[in-house]
Length: 110
Length: 113
Image 1 (cartoon, rainbow over the protein chains, first blue to last red):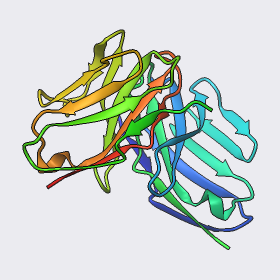
Image 2: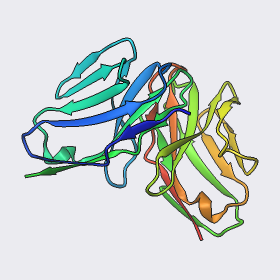
Image 3: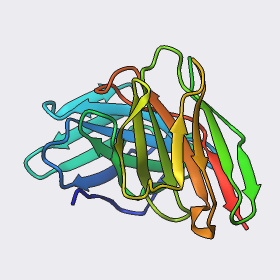
């Protein structure tokens, strides 16, 4: 069945770039998403990319999609301590049934 | 910015009791969803709802679960007879259309004792 995989942890220094990676299996996915979850909070939609795109930039966030390898990445430029959170990759067709990865815990050290 | 709101933020119940988790989706959204996240596990799809009926459900969403849109603003998830393994964070989400991004609420943490 469909699956989404992410590495569990990433630690960076404040000011560095963070790159969070994700692989997925469903080639029919229409959208790929990045959600952020801070402690005790819900899932905040950070950004998403259509499957026919290969890059999307939104301020400090850059999403790269390699459809051939089914690889998605999220780059956060100039990472701040406020970026510390769990980042979830998710894929979905139309209709809202998203498949989530297990989340990558980003730790930003001053 | 409009947001999905969920109440309560934390619910504790005894095994076998019924619980109702409440959600107010974003007002112009037409599609509604419930997801859950058991501690330490992935976020899992439970059910999607459109035009006053279930459009898709997962195998987790068995006869113990039901959803309802009782009025023009609320969307509820009922668990008829809770089990210990129902303990999880339950997230409500909504989207403007079926192809639009999902916006999630802050979740309700359900603890079954």
